[in-house]
Image 1 (cartoon, helix red, strand yellow):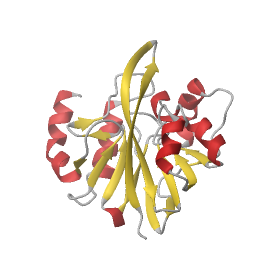
Image 2 (image 1 turned 45 degrees about the vertical axis):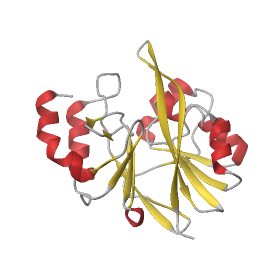
Image 3 (image 1 turned 135 degrees about the horizontal axis):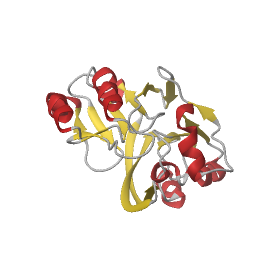
Length: 209
């Protein structure tokens, strides 16, 4: 059976720089009926376990280390034995949430993760966070962008560890080069496509998002 994408929304808070906000997060599960990976273990390990429905969890992939994306990662790893994978540039952010727990492995630009016979290529896309990554699954016609690219523009860059010119360079160099029909599955909110977002790059730059 070919890999499929399952979608779960979990709710909680995001805290950074002394502020806290209520957020809904997209959790993406990629796999088949026997095995899967989780992209961003957000807020609620029990809800993610229920969505896995007994499948073997092979990895918990963190698109970046903001607390709303990694809060449930250690608990989910403890319950399943799965390894938590994070780009090393986001270790400082990770330690803000989990000072006593270290990820089990590192993600690197160009690395390929394989689940249920489907390859996901890691794209290092800093800007929203230093170690932000996206995961491109060409056979599924999709890219998982975390908080790097949303419907309507780039992820926020107004807080610590973020930089607007860097995220624009990441989107231009790593994402807008993908086929225009590629479905963009985001960290929050609705999906979009590369083709829908590409024409707006210069507008984003003018606005400084």
